[in-house]
Structure formats: C-alpha cells, structure tokens
Length: 256
Figure 1: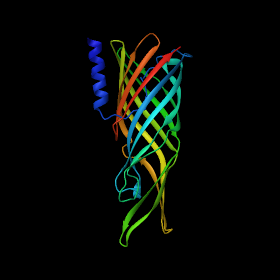
Figure 2: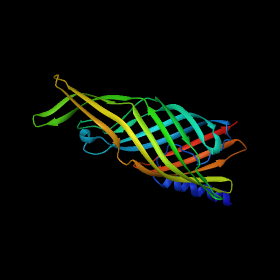
Figure 3: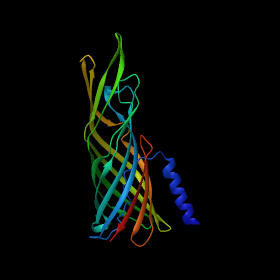
Figure 4: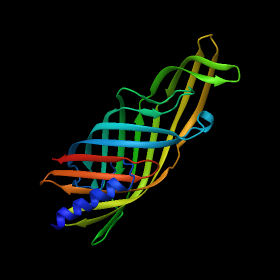
C-alpha cells in the first residue's frame, strides 16, 4: 500500500507541476563501473521562445520525441550516455497571415549526450551535478495566405526555416531512496541556440524577409522524477520539469 501511494504521489507531482523534461535520471548511476544499459524513452515538450521582433508574443512549440539510449557506468557512481531518435515540431501561429494557426512537421532526427554522478553521498541523501547536450535537425514549413496593409490585403506564400537547435542543460540532482524507489529532483539551467527565418513572396512578386535569433523564454527551471525498479535489471523513470511549458518524459532501461 505504501509503495502504491508513493507511485500515485509521484505521478501526481509530475503531471501537475507543468513539467518540462529531458530525462536526466537519478544522481547516482544504477550501473557499476564498466556496466552498460540499453533503453528507450518518450518525451513530450512544450516550450516558449523569445524571438525578438519576429513575433509580438512568445513563439510556442510542441514536440514529441522518441529515442533509444545507451549508457555506461563510470567509477564513483558516475555515468555517461548517448541517445538518438526522432522528433516532430509544431509552432503555434508563426505566420504573418490574417488567418494563421498551427503548423506541424514530419519526424526529424536528433542526438544527445549526457554525463552525471554524485559528489556527496550520505545515509539518505545523494547530490550530484549533470550535463546534457542535445542537437536537433532543422525544420521548415510553408503556407499560403494574406496579411493586411494600409493599401489592402496582400496574398502570397510564406516559407519559414527554423535552424538546427542546440540545447545544453546543466543542473544538480538531489536524490533520496524510499521503499526501493529513487525519488529525485533539483534545479536546472538550459541554454538554447537557434534562429528563425521567414520569407514572404506575394502573388505580385513582392518579397520580404524576417530573421531573428531564438532563445528560451525561461531558461531556469526545476525538475522532479522517480526511478522505480521493475526487476533485477529493469528500471522505469518518470520525470518532469517546471519551466516555460508543460512537458513529461518516461524512460525504460535494462542493464546488463
């Protein structure tokens, strides 16, 4: 009953905290030095971006990520891992048109690399830093429509290009063990680098362009997660983070 209550509580915290997540994991690796694991994960991310003069309001996006991950244990409870997968990308109302809306894209590849481990291990509390780097493929879309000018409505086609995105997460994890599960969380800072370009060509041949750097609207956040052993070598991670959007992640790992 206590274990069931713990799972329900952690799921409630994760789902209700408007969480963004990248699957950081516990502070101490579950692997011995030289031991490996393989896993698969799913992230749903919602973000707000500051795009300068490109948009009057923050740009909002939704993204689904599906990936495979492999990690190896390092001495002193540290771990390094790589991941690769595919992700879609959806921007909310990026166009200049009168009748705009959402735009979606097909799945594109992304890769990631992470490292982390403990620097303090007490009887109940473990603390450690981590770093994670992710690199996403570019994104482009186009749409026909029109926008208003003092001379009237100008119709044409707008093409939008979202450049390859680099995301670097740095943070600290605080971890405690409760009835066999690892409950963890902490602060995180995320650096995001990309740019967005737009070219509008009217039906009469008029051409205009916009080009702005893109950064996260809220780079600081906190995350919370639980790692639950499903067997001797199988672990389930559920994790979330509060930042500028509401996002969730889950990951299943098998260690050899």
